[in-house]
Amino acid sequence: MLRSIVFASVVAGVLAGALVTAMQMVGTTPLILHAETFENAGGHSHDEPADVAASPDAVAPAAEEEEAWAPADGAERTLYTGAANILTAIGYALVLTGLLSLRGTDGGWREGLLWGLGGFAAVMLAPMIGLPPELPGSPAGDLGARQVWWIGTAVATAVGIALIAFRREPWAAVLAVVLIAAPHVIGAPLPPDGEHALAPLPLERRFIIVATVTSFVFWAALGALSGAFLRRFKTA
Image (cartoon, rainbow, N blue to C red):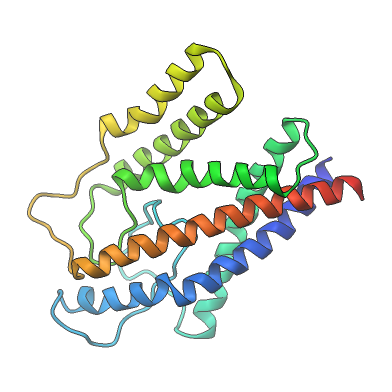
């Protein structure tokens, strides 16, 4: 069983990670680079952009380090971004295949797809209501507070979805609604007053849409592949 989980997660993670990397190269990454032309010059210039590696999860707040090392443009940047995406995808796939196995099912792409969509709802869709994907130069609240809120929202949403999917008692439905709504009632950490985004609003909106679509495809593919390969390795 453990071997099936690991093998399925690695294969699914490599494929889904490669897919999201390709999507980022033509989707989110050009938008990030465009936004950096405004950030580097205080919102007024179109000079050459610096490089930023995208991630398959655009909502989770990233670590903010001054003058942090970054890979060079071109092949090096693509290599590091792809490796990070694949490792992230393998980690998520281990969770999905482990939960599928705990449910006592053989998996399959259809069941895996449903679990993947649940992951998208918990990890991307729910947190982005309070913390939408951010371009460079976007105002943001305290990093620690944002990370705590993001993690709490993802966990609460995942538990709420599980209660709705696997329990039929009225109390479970009520608790699920409370858990899913609670982080948004509390509210995400707000940026300081007076700060504004450096990138134009149309660019921000486009980035949010592209990042959301990319994440949806990533989670759908990861779920379906995890379920399919789990069934295959179980019966091998």
